[in-house]
Length: 82
Image (tube, rainbow, N blue to C red):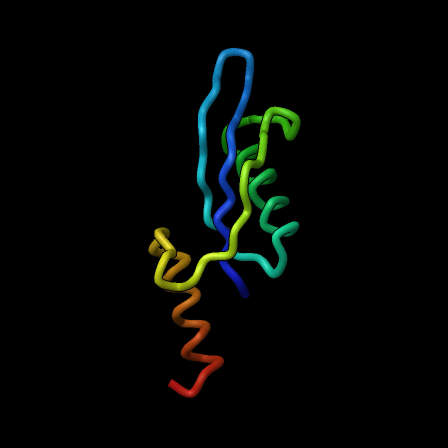
């Protein structure tokens, strides 16, 4: 699994805010889809209000979310010989 950082902006008539979200996915397209689902369910934002700016794969050292970091680190220990 890979970790992607998706950044963008939510543009609603009475709200304009930037966001950055780290998600685990296989491909960038899946990461974007996860962000659409999470923002839509948590913040009641429609897909056309979300503007994706950048999707980038990030290495283990740059992961800011402690839960994702722990999951990925555990996955490497299981898959590798460490």
